[in-house]
Length: 297
Image 1 (cartoon, one colour):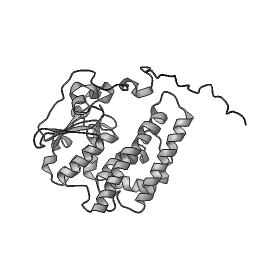
Image 2 (cartoon, rainbow, N blue to C red):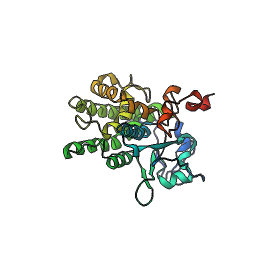
Image 3 (cartoon, one colour):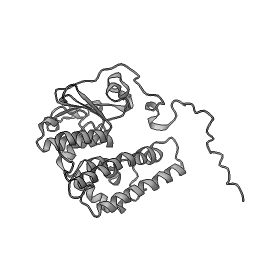
Image 4 (tube, helix red, strand yellow):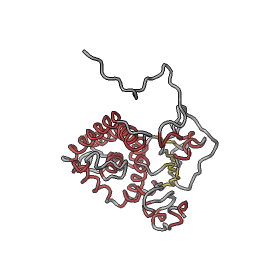
């Protein structure tokens, strides 16, 4: 029996790991091995019951899509202020932000209308479940369908890190391309897409025939992937194979509320698709070049 050939680039872990600052590619400046604030700054607070602090990433737009869908149903209590959190500048490490989200990730929400004192809600899945419960909407009432929606909501929370932090990081953002992690996470990403495709071949939405928070959680990640919006890997992953995921994505993205939700806190792409902050429904109609992307002038 012969030993496997030695790769001179193989990493030999030290006995005790130490942090090499600046190492890690595009997001190195915001990654660190400790928690807590880096600077003092209070968060702005608007006039509405719900205060959202976020960025228009797949995790962020889950919440703004739900809020816009709730408003479209006539739930006036779902009015919200959406404040931009620029994670590339370290806004998520301010003292005010860490106070409401000790994990320093986006999004985070504060419900000022909660009985007693304001309630903080962090982690996107928790926010979706909180709002769906608060307004009794987009979560099926039938126990079987409700459980199915929650199955898929928690599936997304567990699966997406393999897509984003796994495949997305090593394929699109790592400082050097490495075959093993890209192949490993591409395989897992395609497996996840196949899970979705098989399910959606037999169901209109994730929980059956009813649009729910499960769809709002999954589509910003996997829908964006099959449309080539994230990571630029549509051809590499042969996403055209997942026809039922594509059908479902197009169906959700055509919803007017979903279109509005994808604009909120977005700072990239076409200026017409960006609304950096949202404080009133009229913001969507009153957009100007100055209001949409002032830093590009």
